[in-house]
Image (spheres, one colour):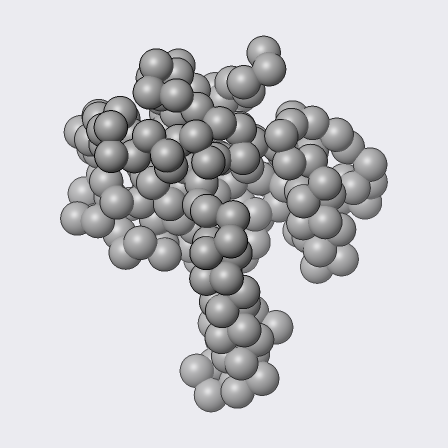
Length: 182
């Protein structure tokens, strides 16, 4: 369905599905809050739109949050399996392994539509963007955003956990990401 919208701007059914997904996303944010990708995106506004930044960052935060919201990622794995972006058996994985598999499936979809999967692939990206994102996350105004993430963070944990997520997003290396339970 999504590929139809990407392939042809007149694909009405695909565009309606994307519209509904956008509405659902807005409702989800209203009810459940946002995550690290959303928070990080505001530090990338000079090189990416908010939506594109979130799309690049989501696989990396998926790995960070997987142990905390495993049930949701099992549902996502089922969708990615059905669409051919995740191998059979992905839904049987748990914890970090599930998060890594879902992140890889997300990245496979991104590659399929010609979308960047790493920050290093974005023109204008620099280490300064990582420094800006970490500084923004430590801003006291965002304390509640950190605490409302699927795996709650504190300002003191930003460098230790968000730092590796941002480094992973720069390089594409999911192994750099640490989970809160490690």
